Image (cartoon, rainbow, N blue to C red):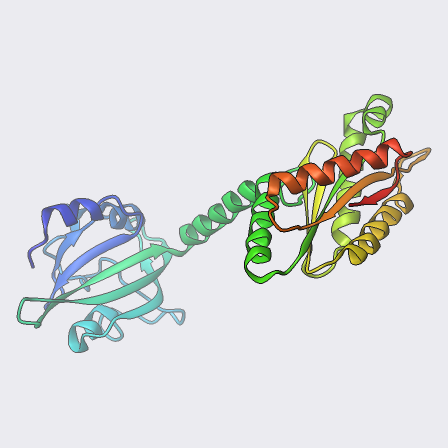
Length: 299
């Protein structure tokens, strides 16, 4: 089996283990990923049969698969791709859970000349998936409150605006600011300020309608995106949020801290862009501040 030089170089950069066998299951290629997962170097395994007590694959029932149940042997026989969860034997003796995938190799006459096995350490696969999920969360989630962050909530608004322009399905946004937040930080400290932020965040998120979303815009500011709503509905849901935050409290050892929010909310209009909607709702929120705070102003 001839391996293209550039293809082989590419395989060396994979985390997955990759090896090639011919029709007699003689190992002709072994990449660095395979070496890392198994402990065997290419020099130690090349030109040996894969069933010669190297990997010694076993299934969940501790049955040896190298002579009865080998996916490579079956793939060479019928040309079908296969996948299995097995336990290979590391060079040091311990068992490693892996997912193996086998596929046939054909020559220019479409005749099977061998097979490829790709395998990945199941523990590493779970770790990779976990890392990817963590990266996704870090990219879209506010670390303090657990709400969507500014970048993500802005992307949601952009999507809603496209939907509005194409389908005329109106949406609304509410700009929310915690009243007297600087005073809370100055009097009780930033740790209590953080707890207040989480209190408001949890209150808002727990009382959303099914298809609405809240995110932390920055500091003590939040934005809620309301789907399929008109001005009347917007007035109802924002007043509900205002009331529920007012009715919440942070319990401390010797006292309870109550907070209120000021809200400015607006509905999407023809010709709107996100910056314009945010600016409009921000200005409405400041009207609520000027009129005494703890108010929801719709415009």
